[in-house]
Length: 150
Image 1 (cartoon, rainbow, N blue to C red):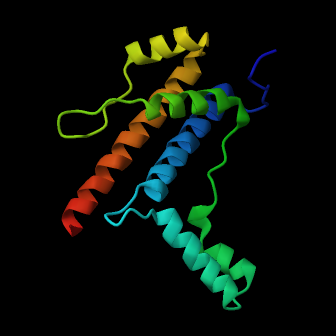
Image 2 (image 1 turned 60 degrees about the horizontal axis):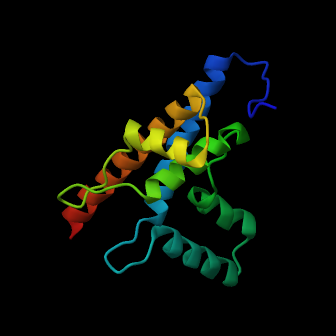
């Protein structure tokens, strides 16, 4: 059985939309889960603030509206293999001489598929490349912001 469900929308439009959502999913994760200089993440700060507001009697609808960035970006489950593969590959990514993360190479993708006995479809490979670019772009932007404030 295929991982891909049929859709009445054109495949190209569907995939383009999903790739944009995956880009945002990774961007959101990097933004919320990168520790600051004190070791705390944006997600931790926002979650504590949200809990305080709820504890102090603010309504759940009002509080949830203010903290929409904590809601996960939703993408079609047909991309779950690509997302879990990206996360596995990203955890083992190398770093350059300045400590910057390196892009996931095609050799690493090929080795990962061989070692896990996984056959990724071309759109899944494209999704991994999109997520990797989003990770690197967001990580770089956050490092620049940290250097400006530090």
